[in-house]
Image (cartoon, rainbow, N blue to C red; front, side, top):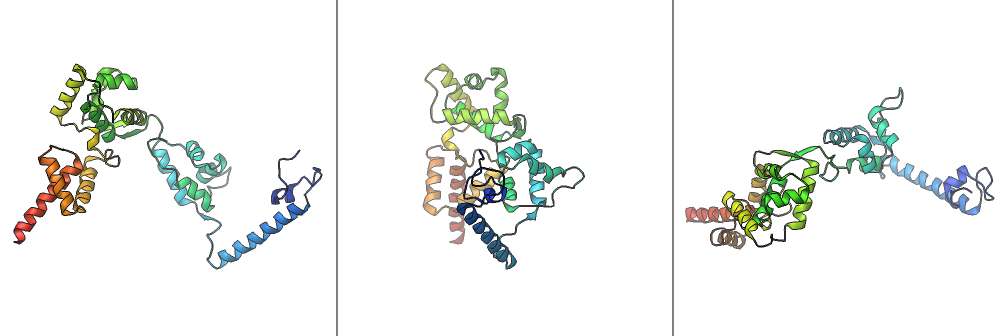
Length: 282
């Protein structure tokens, strides 16, 4: 029994017929489906001739370059094919050609869109791919500020406790993607839960305070992973967009309540800048 359904052009062309015998099917639903497919083809062809519809094929170079970029981040072409939903054969031909044929010069727009949609985000990188350690370091430091000791954090991610301080140290510039995922997931689990009261928690908080490590509430989700230079640029941009009341509240939070959050500190600096600017103008 064929799996091709009645009422489709596929069965109209390839069969089986209405009695499930070899040969094209000419039942009424299949004839109607074929007629509609032909009409749609002619409509789209006419629209493309007038520039009113997207082209049937696009240059393959951008998609090919994107695949090569993904490979540099540890996402091989087979992994990229699986993530994009594009067949392995199509991706292989795009990169390497087939036999003596050169790589594909053109691909369908929908194929390009699927490939370009795959980004080297943390969740899809291979385990050993090196990534910037900034977010991992800040998350570890923030959890220590909540009272979670480095040894307890190490235990929870399956690390040897003596290795854990490297994740919190500024000299660590990269970590493996697998490590970054472990710390991110642990942070999501613990960031709203202070450590149980006790000597270990007290010592952890004291260490964090001494080192100037910020707690989770100091970090917005879209800021915690930004490298220092990018973070400075972004918080200054946001501070510049604040109205006077907002920047004044930031100044109070920074200097009256001791809030060291990057955005609060930037808002406080912006408040002082505006005050000095106003004094100079007067």
